[in-house]
Length: 147
Image 1 (cartoon, rainbow, N blue to C red):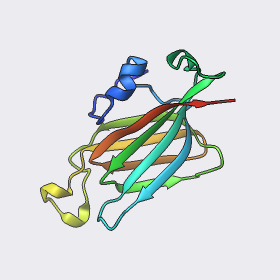
Image 2 (image 1 turned 90 degrees about the vertical axis):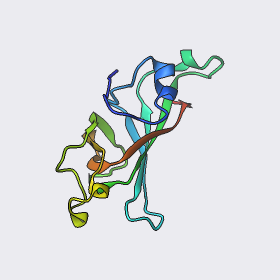
Image 3 (image 1 turned 45 degrees about the vertical axis):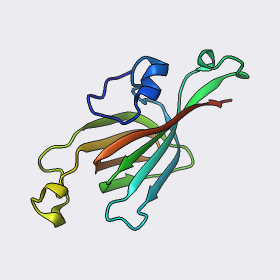
Image 4 (image 1 turned 60 degrees about the horizontal axis):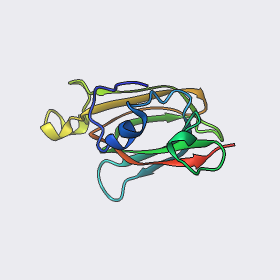
C-alpha cells in the first residue's frame, strides 16, 4: 500500500475499502483506452486487476475475488506508451505533482498550458507509459472472480 501525495478524485472508494491507496505493484492492465472526443487533450482510462484475494471484502463471493480498479486521467499530454502485449503487469506506478517544465509547449507560458500531474508506470511484463494530465479519478472499484 502507498500514499501518493496527490489528489485522486473519488479515491475514498478505494481507501475506505483497503485502508489506504494500493501501490499497484503486480496489478494487471486489462484495458487501456484513449478518447479525444473532439477535445484538444484526450482522456486515458486504465482498467486494472489488483493482485491478491479480496473475497473477505465481499461476503457471498464465490471462490477467489480480485479487485478491478478503473482510473480515468483527464487532459492527457505528452503520452509515451510502449509494448501493449496480451498480458501487461505493472512493476512500479508513480503519480506526482507536475513540475514547472510540465506543460503544453505549443501554448507557451499561458496558465492553461500547465498540467497538474505526472504519471508513470514501468512494467514487469508488457506495457509501460508516462504522461502528464490535470485530473485523476477513480471511476469504479469492484470485485472480479479470478482463477
